[in-house]
Image 1 (tube, rainbow, N blue to C red):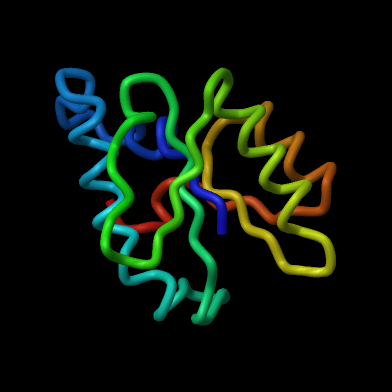
Image 2: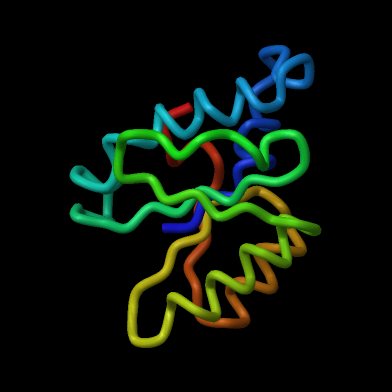
Length: 120
């Protein structure tokens, strides 16, 4: 499972824009149970990759099983790179509401779920 950090954080108007790094850390921590439990229709264990960009790029790796991928440029391009690298012969789910990213990911064979499918 590859999570579009900026898009998922931005899907909840809770003031995340005042502290983008803090919001990304909260999302990282909220995702920590997913490697073991998975999601409905996607039972654990699953690999969870959180793609972070911009001010959130420098958050620390957490103690849980969520792997951070830091985008030096476009977060969407980084997500597509991860889909290409990780999806060979594996079920891949991208979590985002971004329409263009959804199209790019499904063209590569990934499934897409919306931000409300993950804890946040």
